[in-house]
Each structure stands twice: as C-alpha cells, then as structure tokens.
Image 1: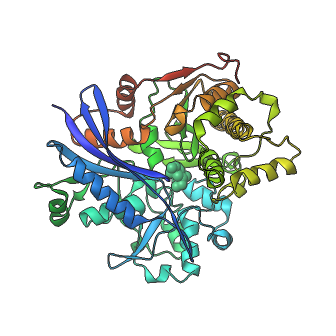
Image 2: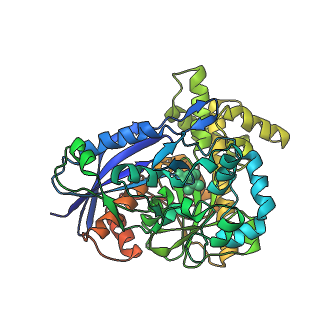
Image 3: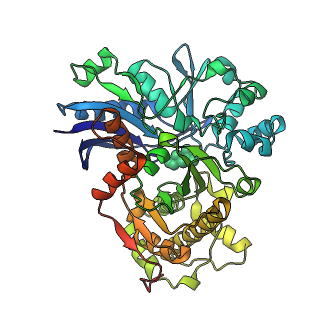
Length: 476
Ligand code: LFR
C-alpha cells in the first residue's frame, strides 16, 4: 500500500522527475526521467529554455502516470527567476539569474529603497539577481509595462499544467518583495517600487492543492482520472532543508549543489545589522520555518572549471582529478574568496581564479588536480567562515553539520569541511530536494503525518549516511 507521488525537481544543470513511494516509516525514490537543463544565450542575454523544460517535464509525467496509485505532482526549482505574462501568455524568454542585465538595476532599486531599509522589510541577503532587481532591469528594457503577471518558474510550470496562477510562498520569499515578518507581499515595498500588486498571484503554502492537471493535458499524458498538482517547497533549497536528516537541535546544514547554502533553521527572522553586513538571508521554509543562511558560490566553481577544461580536451574527467586533488599537500594551494562577484557569470573559471590568487599574492595551482584542490579547500574555508558567523549572529552553537545534495557524494569536500569547520559532518541524502518535495506531497495526501522533525526522522531511517570526523583523516 502507501502512496506514490511525482516530484519534478529542476536544477540549474539538470532536471528529473522522481517517483516517491511513501509507506508509514519508509520512503523510496525512483527516477522516472532525467534530462539536461541547458541555458541558451541569445542577443538579449542568457535564458532558461523553459519550453524544453516543460516538454521534458511532461515526458517524465507520461512515465510517472503509469503508476496506478499516483496521488499527485509537485514542482520545485532554483529560486528568483520568473516569466512575465500578459493575458496568460508568456512574454519573452525567462532570463537566467547568471545573466548580467541587473548591473544598473541594482543601483536604481537602491535609490528608491536603500539596502538597509530593503533588508528591514524583506530580510534577504543582497544578491544582484534577486527578483526585485531583475524586475527593475525588465522595466528599463520596456518589458515590465507589457506584463500583467509575474510567475516564478515552478509557478509558471504549474500554471501551464493546471491553468491556475499562484505564488508558492517559499519561493516568493526570494523575490525580495515579501515582508519577512508576515510572509505576505509587502504593500510598502510594492508601492515604493511602483509594482502593482496585481502583477503577483495570491500566495499558497507547501501542501496546498494548486489544481488538477487540465483534462486535455491529462489525456495527452495518458491519465484518465484527475491528477492533482500540490504546492511543495517550490524553492529547491526549501525542499532540501525539509529533508535534512537531523536528529539534533543544534545542527547546521550545507545544501550542496550548484550553490552551497550554509546555515541554520530558526523560528523567527534574524534582522540584525551585523547579519545584513555579513550577507545572511532569511528565506521562508516549509511549515513556517526560516532558513537563516548564506549563499556560498558552491560546486559551480568546479563544474564550470571542468567544462572549461573539457572544451579544450573532451577526455578530461572529474573523478581522476578528485583523486589527484586528494594527494595535494594542503599548503601547496592558495585559498580564494569563493563569493567574489567575478565567479558568478559562466566562463573561464580557472583563469578568473588564477587572477584572484595573483592579485592576493597566493600560490597559483600548477595542475588541474591542484586547481580542484584549491577550489574545494576554498569552499571548505568559506563554509567554516559561514558557520562561525551563524553562531555569532544567532548566539547558538552548532554541534554538527549536515551536508545534503550532490556535494554530499564528494568525499574530499566532506573531509575538508569536517577539518576546516572542526565539526562532525553527516553526509546525505544526495536527493534531499526530491525527498523534501515528495514528503510534503505525501503528507498532504495523508500518507504520513506530522511535524518537520518527524519528516526528518523518516529521511534518517531511509538514508545511508556517511560520517566524517574533524580528525579522522590525514589527507586534509
Ligand atoms: C539553489 C538556489 C539558491 C538560490 C539560487 C538561485 O539551487 O535555489 O537557493 O539562491 O539557487 O536561484
């Protein structure tokens, strides 16, 4: 028995449709479809190929509906990006958050609401691609005035499936336009930034029924009965953190994929000036929890370096480079500031890293293996810095670190993280985002009950976790 649900989980480089089967104390995941997500650069910048993502999503659902007891579908993706619509039609191709069109728009927004005040309202760290800045860029390009609706990407895909336009709250909290205290659209910010409230859909919470897949689409998918679409933590980080298998109160997490989101969960927003200056964010999570965290540049540094090397030599592979990196003595490589803005756009990452190290009189890696070590070392140091800061900013000690997402499989990174933070690291699950998505749907369908802690216990029972101790290795 039990319940089966489909989790559509879109990442910056690939998407998947996972089938999650939940039965009392057990949750099992299976892949129904996996597909690449390849951004496209056109004359007007870097875009997401949303039509291809929707096509792949539907192809994945066609597989998923073969499950006779499929109870619902939930969609999550990265945050902040959106489609502009008019009369229900998409206007233009959604931009990628790594597009550089917001450079001037940030200053334009800050002229109206300065950074201190903006933080007081929305509690968000400054990232140049937050929706509020992207919308300002669209206004300057003359696009915003054409639109009557803004839908974040998972909401856009849910709209295409169901015909219903909503704004899922966890993702909406990354726009910079929610009041972090109330969790509602901030009337004051909208007013001052001259954004009409009607541009934004009504908010829904994870677990709410968005609507059923429209009958014509359902028929096309091969389903002859209603297929509900359920709101999940549609911001992937919200879903991932809901599935952190922590048993302890004093845990921190690193949701480690393209980005590394490093922080803790709190009940109330932390809005101190010190926290703002340290670029800590308050993002809304599942069940009203708040993720107090910092965006660290993440494995993007590694995957983008690898892509650069592979352009010159397609035979380059990650695994041997990681093995080489593990042999590099720690003092052989320099450490760079992973969060320097120069690393945000796509491009030749090794040269940018080299330039940074050169400017700061640090040793330059001589081999690809040394580059990999330098990147992982720098990430581990960035994590250590963020953990130290979060302890100071919340006044709460962190006793253990949970690493979830793709990066939890990177043994060297986990070892270095344990060493540099001086904390035990518990690694896994890799598919935390899909699990968080599945569990929220399963709870909405009545297949499991309970608090965030009981969902976490379920993940814990069903995951093979790896443990790393600060002193357990000579390699780091
Ligand atoms: C992670 C993530 C981060 C967000 C970044 C951009 O996938 O969602 O939480 O800051 O992508 O949207």
